[in-house]
Image 1: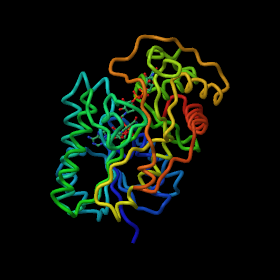
Image 2 (image 1 turned 90 degrees about the vertical axis):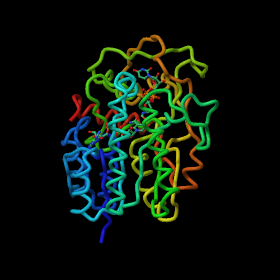
Image 3 (image 1 turned 120 degrees about the horizontal axis):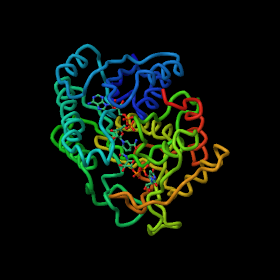
Image 4 (image 1 turned 90 degrees about the horizontal axis):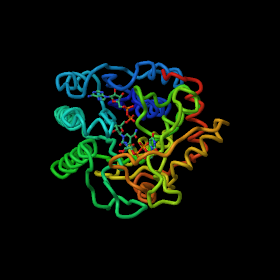
Length: 336
Ligand code: NAD
Ligand code: WQD
């Protein structure tokens, strides 16, 4: 029998791409999403691409009774847990929403899993748990810190997961710390569809390119980097999705996996603008403005630990990221 995977937040940006890969790999998928930051159409597109559909449950990970019902109705083998809020700036203004959705949500999910004796989970953490790193590349043993409530929520969940692993040897847990996800599925049918004004660089650039936004504001050019703009490790969302399948497999022989998922290459904001200009064949208007509060100069990882732990390396480069992101944006100028 094929394994059944519960994907929380499966309609979201990373969740939809991962759900597609799971279906294509032959897994049965149950998506639980409250659609607070996504649209059901994303899953229609996933079904079209896969030629088969996930089961879709509209609901909240904080609903313990609903989770109990799900675990008793479906024989779930593992959980991939994407559901959560992710806007750093909003988390500073509404910290309690972030602790509620992310920390309480994850706690409730873990309680329901424990109750149902489902003890495999892959969790979406973030490079934000390294705070302002002392040096780059960032490896998994770097000190952890939070500079905002979003990051603090991820750290709290990581600690919960580690404690659980220590307390009960039945648990198998993968903590995946993503760097900067970007790009879209190569079909152009699924991709990132932010609500309102994008917070992140790539969707912002893409919306300038398609004409929805007038110009990009570059947050500072006086950082200690090659060209003064911020340097990040942009990872193709399909590589990231592959990382989740690799982690699921690796949990067969590891109890606790903590891995950075990035490419090992850092690109500046100006590098990203230039690469996107090549992909879309247009010049992109931008202006240098003040630094954004809390931004760090440089962040990129060393992917060798991920290779050793989960036998995964990203396969796609900056050009693929820009071409695929642009195809998605052009085919869906206003999102889903
Ligand atoms: P997303 O917002 O596109 O997806 C999250 C999904 O979870 C959405 O479909 C949303 O509707 C759903 N959701 C939120 N709260 C829920 C709840 N209480 N119950 C049920 N569903 C809920 O975000 P994404 O970019 O796909 O990110 C997925 C995960 O990866 C998040 O946990 C995020 O913190 C983490 N992450 C994202 C990035 C990034 O830059 N995109 C980087 C590092 C980590
Ligand atoms: C990238 C670079 C900006 C927008 C965030 C979260 C992190 C993780 C990924 C969830 C920076 C610059 C951006 C713009 C700009 N998310 N920029 N103009 O800040 O590295 O990471 O998303 O876990 O936790 O903090 O990503 O895409 O916002 O910024 O100049 O309009 O682009 O200053 O140098 P960031 P980003």
